[in-house]
Image (cartoon, rainbow, N blue to C red; front, side, top):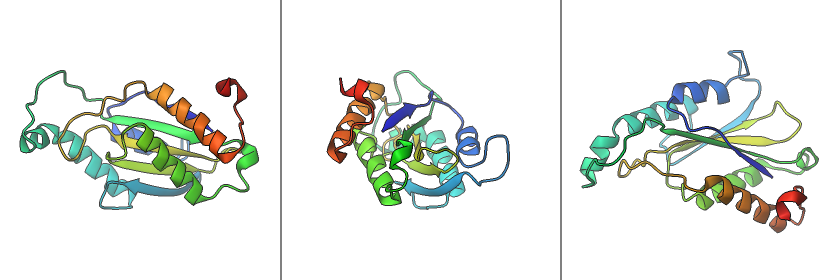
Length: 174
């Protein structure tokens, strides 16, 4: 398992254009399937609009939750990461197993309450999913900080491999 975190961004449009389409094309052949978390839809384009609306309404959400709109502001609402399995694992890997790994990784990041869209790509030999998150909490408008996220995901991935009984990244294990 190799987790990879993308740079935080400000454009859901850009993120969804990349993850839901083929590179440099308007086709969607590399998308195997999509899922959502904490959204009232499974349609990725509708989910994108909901995520944009949530991010734009962060001040109103804070006010409704009784939270003062203080501190630094940021428009880096988009957080994305991928989980990639070794090509040797492709044959036995199911959608359910991939989603279980995503849910575990979200919990590890303490981000399982955030709006998320999961996109499975089939354009590589290694099975992989991308997780696009809205850093703005839809309940109170606060921005999730994602502190030590690389270390958290690396530790989780190592535990995940150990749990499955097959260490494919021995350097990380050391």
